[in-house]
Amino acid sequence: MIHSVELGRSKRVSGRDDSVTMRKIRYNLLEDDASVKDVIELVVSQGPKDEPVHILDLDDVVAKHQNWRRKLPRVDPFYAVKCNDDPAIVQTLIALGAGFDCASKAEIELVLQRGGDPSRIIYAHTAKSIDSLVYAKACGINLMTFDGEIELDKINQVHPEASLVLRIHYDSANAQVSLGKKFGCDPEHEAPQLLRYAKSLGLSVVGISFHVGSGNSDHECFYGAIKAAKKLFDYAQSLGYDLRLLDIGGGYPGDHDKPIDPYATTINGALQRFFPLKTNVRVIAEPGTYYVASAVTLIANVQSKRIVRTPQGTVRELMYYLNDGLFGSFDWLNPRKYPPQVIPGNRQLVRSRELFLTTLWGPTCDSTDLILSGMAMEELQIGDFLVFDDMGAYGTVLATNFNGFAKPKVMVYISRRSWEQLELEKRNRRTKRKVH
View 1 (tube, rainbow, N blue to C red):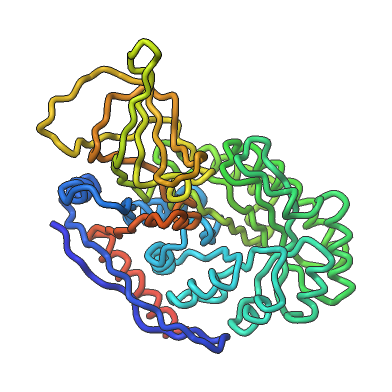
View 2: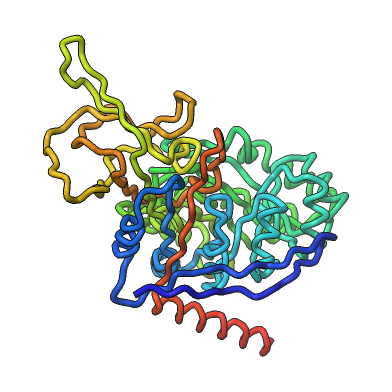
């Protein structure tokens, strides 16, 4: 059984002239005997559409948050909004008490519109515009990162009361995307100099941050990064600073078959070694992929088909053209290494079990719009549905309307049990605010 409900109250955000009223979000409420599989069957039963469908399972987001709290009890999660900025995800994490890593004025605005607390936001961009700094100050956002002298000069000019976090670079050799060349200073040479410069300006530096890289598969790199941060804590103390915040950034797995356990073991061990509880250092992180990768299932369909033959007339390859592709859900951070689940559009049709070399293309006229190739699959037919798991990270935010093709339609689902839990969490937080 599936019902539709709405969540969200009108709220105007201060700090800008053109205040925006928050719109309510429509959720599809699943009774506890239903599942995402039932939702997939519902979508398939409605037949092929031009637009692909993202099924957003908020139960998965809730479960990820609970798992994080169990495995990393000392680390306060600040969700990286850039990974998937769907308002339903943001509002769910607000209800659960998560913080937010925002990298732009628009991301800050989204979190505040949804009822987020400015004190639970870190402005984690080291190259902020003057306009965005003015906005952050007006909204009461004080926690922000820096990695250079010019950034310190801007902050000193616009928001000198800010609580600053020095970002160092510590790249994992096994990250899909290394960030250290663009962001973060050298921890050995530049970082001490920047701490001295911040001190000379009278600015408040409260902590150290790093990001080992997106799509990181090496959990052990966190140990070295935390160790490097500890050296800077000690150096800052010699300057008269009393650092109380460690931000261990992002780089955590989020696919359904990639547990966070080895990362938690390494991080917990490093914290115990370098920042034991008695130091009273607050530890935060910026997980993005972890929270949302497995929360989204994509349903695409076959819109066209081409048979490629050898000179002798035998089938060399079958190529299919889907209603989603590289300019939609399949961004460069999400390569497909395994075949999707196939749901026949016509279930009465007798299917051959023969395997063919297969290529899946996206719908656009760009020849780089390739989803996967060289994979052996059974023959597909026009109107068949392809179901891809673990599609929640970056696909939605990087999707375009190139060639006029539709972006994925997002359908938000949550179980009644999780819905009631979120409502209880919200009531409890409102009660705590009234008490304080």
